[in-house]
Length: 79
Figure 1 (cartoon, one colour):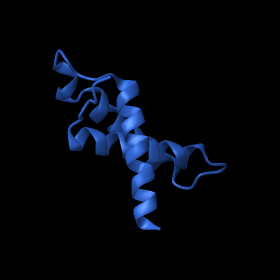
Figure 2: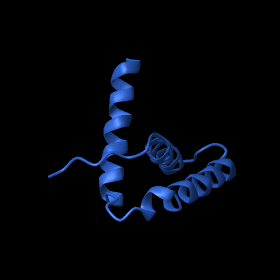
Figure 3: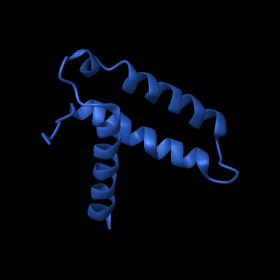
Figure 4: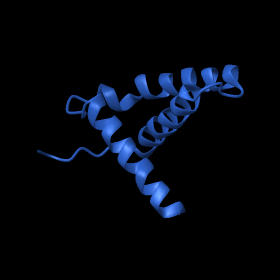
C-alpha cells in the first residue's frame, strides 16, 4: 500500500480538530461555545482543503490515521 503524504496545513488542521473534539467530549467542558466554533472552523478547513481536488488524493480515513499518529508523536516528544 502506497503511503499518502498530506500537506502540512491539512494534517495540522485535522490534528487540531481531534484535540478540540476530545476537549468537547469531556464531561462538562469549559468554554463550550468557543470549542464548538473552533470545531466548525477546523471542519471547514479540512473538508474544503484544495488537496481533496486532486485525483489521486488519499482518503479521509488515511488523514485521520495520519493525524492520530502525528498527535501521538507530539505527545511522546513533549514528555
